[in-house]
Length: 466
Image (cartoon, rainbow, N blue to C red; front, top):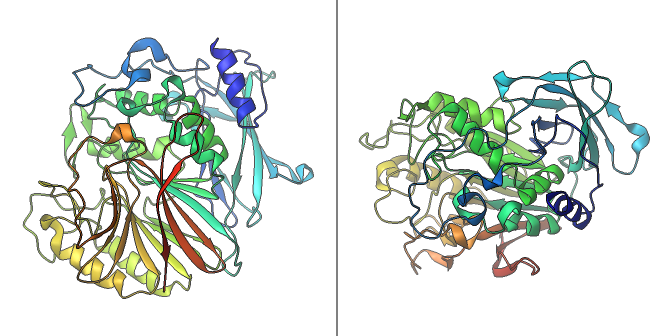
């Protein structure tokens, strides 16, 4: 029965149907990320079984409504890894004659049986196809393979249409389509984005079932990308991953803390292990003449939340903040999107003291709002908040686009409600934010997730820029 589901999913998305042989398998699929005009990173994990053990806990497929009960700890054997060897081939989709391949590479337990291939000398603005083969160590016969697509960025002088998607906040407790996971991924794939950004809280260590050790934290990543829709999406869309508190350690965390046996530094290492990632977790990417995105790192360099606010208190840290301001000033992109794990404008819900929209970081928040609002066609896109919105800072005029959580099931309350002096648009529901830039003009659209057979619903649309 499960094999039939996989076949139907593959046919629906137009993917090749490949029979399962013997281990190692690709139970976590492939993630392709950090693409620019000439390079990309392909992340792969080998598994000992083709699918996660979804029957271990009801929460895995049923999710939770409202406040969760204590479901205990995360089972570490939900999708165990497998030793083995990998081989990657890639080519421009329209020209398989230009195929390039790697040699065979071993994976091992030390890195949770993952490997990241760093591809270079790619063609700009090109849709690539790829295939990853797996075999047992030293064997000649291929056990299984996985295939998909990704897109590279246009060159800086190419004025081409660009469409990208941003979402935030997903959890095991908010799955809405059983073993398929989050149906938003199925609908976002149909949207055919050039690239995708997840702003963080990709999973929650501190929500049931709890992950309080390295093994439990890894198991939660293994399960999250073992869901069919989640896995197939990332096999076919260029993605950029950011992290926030819940996928670093715990709610509102900062360096030096622990959650059970899991340390903050271990959380940083696990994140870099489980997603395609370059040298730094803060970075900027140019997508042609009209689009440039910045992705900030809001956990690694921050002061403690309970420090007194002032000029020295920071979320970004001195080095990152200087980099952000310098690269923004130097950019000649028509539209600039600063993507932050947390809000800079807000307003936020009551009792929060963890981001630039809160009193605890007011000094740096005001510094950033003043700086960003002075740059033409510059906008903030933020995650973290469990509601969708478009805010305009009453003091500086800076626009902030809150993408909202991945679905309505992840709306756990706490929203401030619509605040007229800030909000041009407000919704307590979830979904995703789509940005389209064409002929130098930008448009933002907030989508809600439809039923399984329905298209996503446009909740609000807004032209950006002057």
